[in-house]
Length: 247
Ligand code: GLP
Image (cartoon, rainbow, N blue to C red; front, side):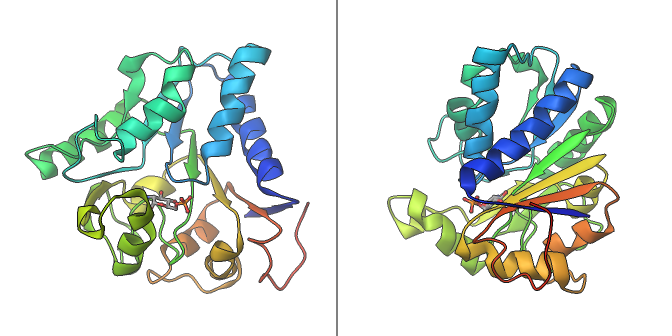
């Protein structure tokens, strides 16, 4: 596991963008696993800049998003479909047929989840998975206690995640209680993981992820088992780490 500590948020997201861009240049038809949340916003901004200014092309890239809220249609401004369109897909030359985001309004969740897993396999598997981390150590919507071998499925959101996400909704009651999420087993099959975390609020989760024992109670700790996992943090996110890591 490689831990890279960057001076600030911008440097952290630029480092992540360099890694994603280098994969796309090497393998134009690569498969990316994408994340939502405020943390990867800078990464998407930088990739859009590279598309506009440096000729980075996405036309052959396939993407699979990690998760989506149950009950929100793709047109809902807080849905992850909407987030991805507005913050990334609408600004690049990606082929809409190659975009996969779990569908929060699906009627048969189990069948949908199985289909999603199969589509990942058919695409050849995920080459690089971008990850954020919840303050409680969740990855995607795999909350504490999730099976470390889990596959794409429906999950109940934890109280903390509901509280953390309430800032995006008008009323607390509007925050969805369930999500469809790739499982931890699904995520671990990606050939490369790039986990981003910035700010004080993530420092404890990062300490446990990098230096703590592997436990389902902190799902992100599983990345210690991945052969090609890179954790990119800013100074604040790294502030509780006890060892020195690469800059
Ligand atoms: C949500 C997403 C996660 C993301 C997390 C942290 O729970 N499902 O994939 O990592 O939020 O979000 P932020 O980056 O806004 O702190």
